[in-house]
Image (cartoon, rainbow, N blue to C red):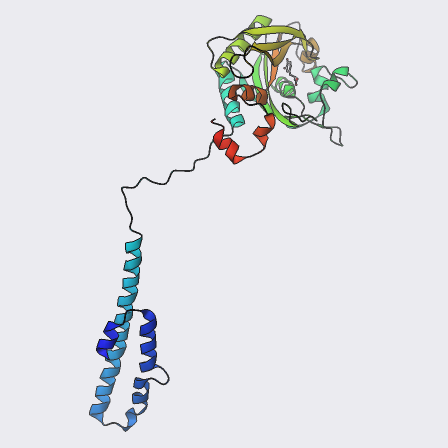
Length: 319
Ligand code: DAH
């Protein structure tokens, strides 16, 4: 019996043998039942055999279990010389990246970052910006209206009003954030991002404005120089108003003039609406679409790709 136990290789066989010895109909169970008929010496011998066999089973079980573990370890040997699995790191969304870059550039020019709510009241989004009710310029923007008369901010220009109301002048700030309009095609999405700059002091001129725009575009597009075209335009909150085009080089748009931003000298009515005396202070404002600038920088055709949330696109877009 002892040899038999020692030669068993699997837990199943060991279990079967154990049952045949110690089970209900097992050989040892039968012997133990008859114990009362034995003399003292025979009882002692049977006891000893019982204990010894149980020990043997236990020992063999531990040996087999150990062997199973060792065999498993043998199969999955660790090779510390192999290269580790590549890390699956996340990356910043290209819009987030552009947002950080733009903020860093404007901050380095001395503009301080300001924010405002995305649900805006009529005063900050329109009226204070010299666009009172029934002003035709309200039609320039396809506004989402809320039932209580508030709007989803159509322009970050609202932030410049909030900043001037809160801090007065002199002020040099920029706002960056989400804006909403009812439009959707390859270059428009109902939610997009705008950047707004404002600089008001006693001797600010149009050439300061153009200087900062030029310096900003050079830094953002990483160019030694940029060719700009300044066109007269109309915005209710600036006078004179301009639009700035950039001569694009490279890619499908090579050689084309692209409209980049609106800007101008802040309208006296806007300053008055914020409690500022326009005879004492004046300055400029500019505003542009962050998404459009990011599209140009990264060579994208379709703005909607930014918002599809397709991880494969984000991985392969090379940002
Ligand atoms: N708010 C304008 C828009 O959404 C952009 C703009 C134009 C902002 C001229 C300005 C500005 O601050 O001076 O189209």
